[in-house]
Length: 365
Ligand code: CUA
Image (cartoon, rainbow, N blue to C red):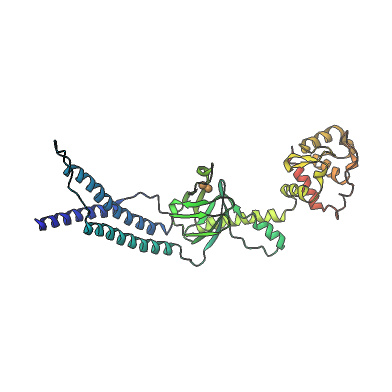
């Protein structure tokens, strides 16, 4: 009788473990493995799944068996027999899970330390979380022929809202946040790491599968949390290098083309006192002494068309330049001749500054 019961338990145990192993080996619940690290994470997950399957079947099977086997007989209103527990059973069902959890801890730690181990020649990409999007900062090598200021300016342009990574090259991301806690999560890479304000966390992966994936945010960070998704592009190393070269030449242009309109806007806000007299909504200027400059490109064109043709000024650009270097040449009706007369002096306003301001004002239609 006793032997019979033991062999029944052994048979049930073998069957349950067999089911667990089959589930663990055949389950395919994860997205595509797009990084070198994905396989070992999936093996760990499937090992846990196999064990969880056995535990699930024992617990749920035990409940169902007990419901059926110990069901109250019709007409039996007596109390059940008193039960003060079974020490051997309790020790067993505590000891076995403790050993299982301990082994899983060792296994998990091994997988985590393997996939996060530093590698040679890592491509380092900065990741910044912000309500509600990700920004990626790419490595910058200073240009030998640029000044330190130009290199500093160029470096700030090495950013993108797309995460480009080279297939087959180890990548290290250095993650931070400018506001609240976000979570950098690329399911296809099996990489997830919190972005914490005031701290830099790291994660490593080696992309292997070309394609377009999504970096999502895995920490509830506010109303736009669900929209915090940016594309991840796994490219051939050559494509990635071309992307970096393109970013680099744009960064160089931004730093070395001092007449670009964005710089002009910066100048009239930060360097020259235009805002003490003029209003320009686009730049946040609120002065009222001089004529407002909203829509100045269109106004300049109208002035050229209607009144100034005889003065030799033929384009809006020429009119704007003239208004800066010789403001008395034409006064907007209703305003006095109060604009400083020395902006034509390159020691007061260098030509690059003036042209950048003109180029910026030409965007104000
Ligand atoms: Cu950022 Cu959720």
